[in-house]
Image (tube, rainbow, N blue to C red; front, side):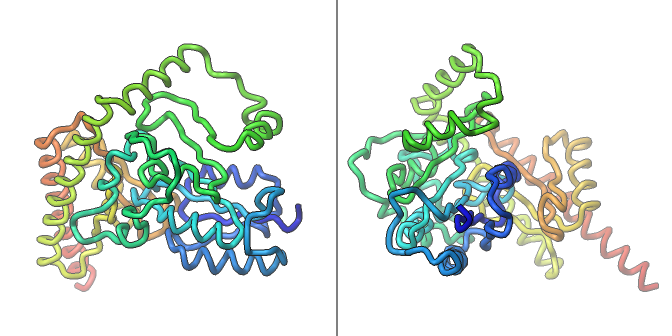
Length: 345
């Protein structure tokens, strides 16, 4: 109705933004909060509740009037949302939450929740998510690879409206599934236009998804997760050391490795032109499959080299990546300093 609202993390993927637009909700009832900032989310939620004159004591039985939309693992930063605090705060204030598990599925689960905490001192995840005290429910069966909700045992949290699991990332397939109540699924089957007016997946796709789940949730999945997080740890240790060495020589250095515990790693290289040229060099000369993420896809000044680590990579490749990246970043600094000296002349 006219007082319903959607509150969205400012860094959610464009597909979620498009989904919000398709909701037919009045644009003035869509609100943003600062990325992964639960206090700012609560501020926005409180303002929305006051505007709509809704009770904030409990979730209405007729369904949510305020929906909060977040990702479990963010595609451009690789960081993890403080899901437990988001869900708890939503429940206290009468809202519900939709969580996109696109980059959590296959990567995180109950068997490797420790991998959501960085060990290099740059992360605050252990403080904001309280993974040592997950939401308690009867279903505590160990299962790896089901996502961040599974890792935190939050799949049955009362404020969870639904979760979306896409098969185009770790699963290596295509398609997606919405996990929610029977009422929600019935509604989507009958009213979700993208679903109603699209062709059903063919049998071979369904078989592929089934087999992918068998792998992700089984012994092979555990082996690959253990492997990829060993590489994540190695990459971050070497890359941070390389950036520290560069900063010793150039204290005003703008390059930065974002605090991501996931296989999605990002090195900030401000400026579209510089970011593109560095990636072109790495691809053409170093044979490294890295890509520039430019503004306006990300905020101006936050352009970055996006790096995805896979279980089929090895230590030698990670060392080569860090060495090549450190080398070209150093050359970029030297060229920038030379350009500044020439401009002063």
